[in-house]
Image (cartoon, rainbow, N blue to C red; front, side, top):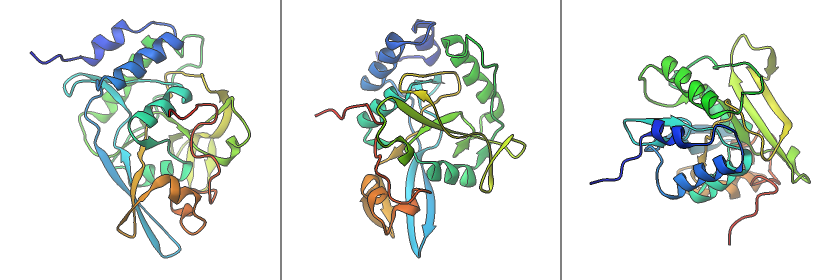
Length: 247
């Protein structure tokens, strides 16, 4: 008999309080292949006469099977570790913007109270269910599934900060270029912050530049190509600072 893990059962076994034990359980589930199937959606970019296709998870990372899976919350530390396991990278603000622009399913941010329970497992499950209600069974590239941990040069020189970004909404209180966001690029949180809004969206390192396969990390450092994937130009920060790369 196939060993099937239902997402709701997995979440029910997690510690209610955020912390290392919960993060370790999530990471172990990823290592064990307990993820719901990931659809890698192509996201297209053009700059300076060059074309790129990046492959982004169409939804936030979900643990469970195809019939019962739950979008999980994770710290920036855990998100980087998951990215390493899946041969992926954390997104940039530019890639997040492209996802919003090209999303086939757009929903309103599921904003909850910023209270003492915002990091609890119960709030994780509640946020997931609220997103599900809005998605209503639609498939394709989806946004807003939550806020995202992102790469930015503003993290250079810091080993205890993390950058988050997202929650697009035309009626939002803040503006960023042509996009309205509730969460513009911010470095208010440390590596181990988590709350109900911080989901895991990743980008595959394999990408296409003018139809030729390239490594996203190489693209991000190339002065001639970086702006296809980065609004800051070439990046000096290619992974979450403070999270060592496994040998």
